[in-house]
Length: 332
Image (cartoon, rainbow, N blue to C red; front, top):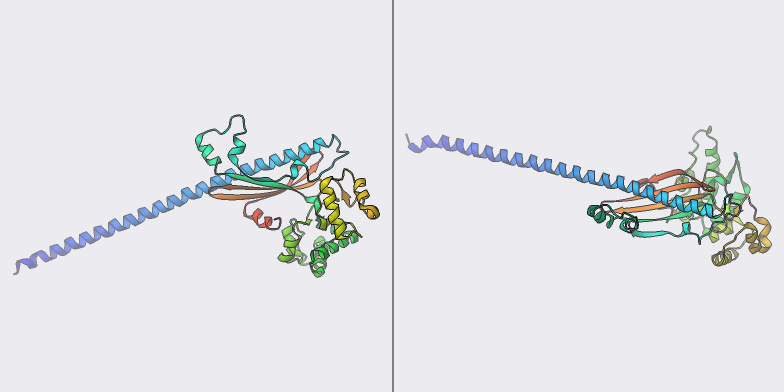
């Protein structure tokens, strides 16, 4: 027998064992890599969730800050708000430009707590603004009980005309709004609570994008604040007023706001009889607070609608995150 033939099976066995060992090592390495990847993803996800939770708390603080500003503004108008006036030169109307969170923390008596907090606060940016919702035409005011409000319908017709929007869509919205008011009607649309939901009533996204800064959806009928309304809204809510006159009124208001509705009537001149306390005012009860917080791994947006009754404020609703960001497209 050839001596080499006796060692061949042993060599084959050693080769098979070596191959099995290599496969085992490769399998263990693959499983270990997979476990490390899963652990890394879990840590990253936990970090993002933690940052989002921190962002929500910070945005809640921003809402509280806005409420303080609006409350102090109401107190400045007197205990009974007998001479309440809201206009665009007040502190609440000044937007908060993007600023580092560390700028706020450094203003506190104890500053930031530690170096880690200080490093993070340098990477966090906060911005926001407050919007007077009574500077816009209220879609809810199109209804008076279960009937259509003819005066408000004419105001919306003038607004659509000023913006070059199709009147057919307005008529469709009115019909659908009346249907939504009747909850017993089969197939009736839901009553909208947000401006973006007006697409349910037949408005196209293109039309809504042009209406975005001129309309709102409030739970009750409220007058238009002539101190904050745009020229288009003034033109729409004052029958007989020309667009040129509306633009002149806005320029006049920028120099000196109207302290009372009588002052506005004097500025209107021959159209003064059209303005009334039911449809026009110089103060506001409903505001929207918009906040944006940017962190290293997340950006969070929040929108809140608050109702002010003298110095008492209550939040009607809040939208946070992706939902708020979707609605924000109709506000910028």
